[in-house]
Length: 357
Ligand code: KG4
Ligand code: ZN
Image (cartoon, rainbow, N blue to C red; front, side, top):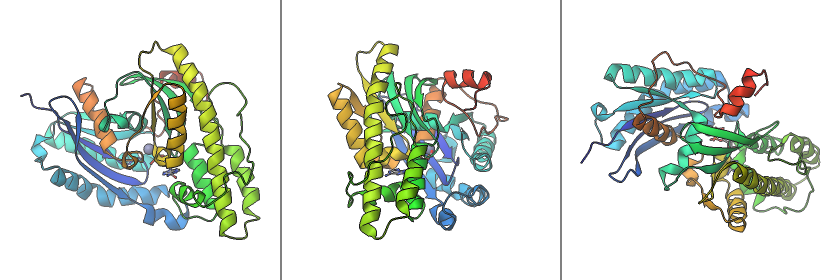
């Protein structure tokens, strides 16, 4: 029986301080030995959004015991850890630096390899934590900072098929929530309010809905919600706006996902058509159900992470670490924090050509 790698994953790119111990069984199935997350919601609530300096300070205060708790709960000794994987970007630089420095110091002190992880790659591979998932697959990544359709060829090889041209979807949920007077973080609250509302009460704009391609746009929605929010008189009005907003998002994702399927099929020879949705917004049950339907109608298998692994966590960072460890892809201890770090080569090329990403 060969010794299976044991990886410590660390995440601190925004407002969650997280650590996890990941390994795999004899059949190569990933095992989450522990997964500790400390959310900073209470720190940022009164400001209506994440305050970078406060977030960094909270990471500094917590990181030590979060990592220790992850080790304790995993039942392994720290000497058994084979490598440390820390998020290096994208994210808030003051926050990234905390988990990154801690991970490097830990690797240095224990004399084990260090692996830098792209947070988006963590989301992209997160469904592997609980499902058998073969490459290639089509990924819809919907989080607080990103909204993209990506063709995932293998670990480290991603091709962007479509992206938001303005706000990320999580951002649109959070801004709508703010306009409705809902506490931060608003995304999950909108889902709750929408349950009691009439999704057809208001017709909201669907920017670039009828333009070809699978790019997305959500900024126009914010202006429409701003206007509606001025006429809210009671809770029912609020429920109706939330439900209409969520329905508009469902319609946009239904149509754009169908287009993404055909773009993806042009680009890949497929025996098995797989669609993965990841990132914080993938926790939304209504969006999951619409995307499951579009898969069934188009002969795609849908593979979604469990709800508790959609948002930021360190198990997904450990998962990338595990894959890179097996490929012997290690990094030096001077690896920098990267506030901007696109996943795909296409984007890197555009950046080289001077296009703002
Ligand atoms: O992936 P994530 O935890 O952090 C980033 O990498 O950005 O995503 C956070 C985003 C937030 O905008 C949050 O409001 C949104 O995901 N979100 C949701 C839901 N749960 C989280 N949006 C809609 N419905 C939800 N249930
Ligand atoms: Zn994230």
